[in-house]
Image (cartoon, rainbow, N blue to C red; front, side, top):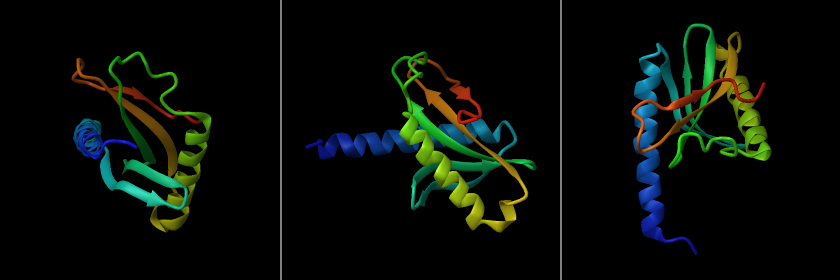
Length: 121
């Protein structure tokens, strides 16, 4: 059984890196729509947008920045896509925008995350 202390630490670290991701993406001109948006298909860490695109952002931490190839499994990507489609369908004001799923990976050494755009298409 996972340790409750490690679970709380992991949750706090998740919030910390989500805060950093929000700042990073706001500096790129995006605005925050939802944080930790729950759907019937799972949770999306961040939903942000600019004038043309809705970004569904998965935020991860890895000890080594280059350790990113297996960050998300195909099943996790499929759930992310289903969750994104559900959010787009539930929010009619977004329906005329394009969307994509991005991955932001942080590590302890780098100040700027690795930003992998449009990971599902």
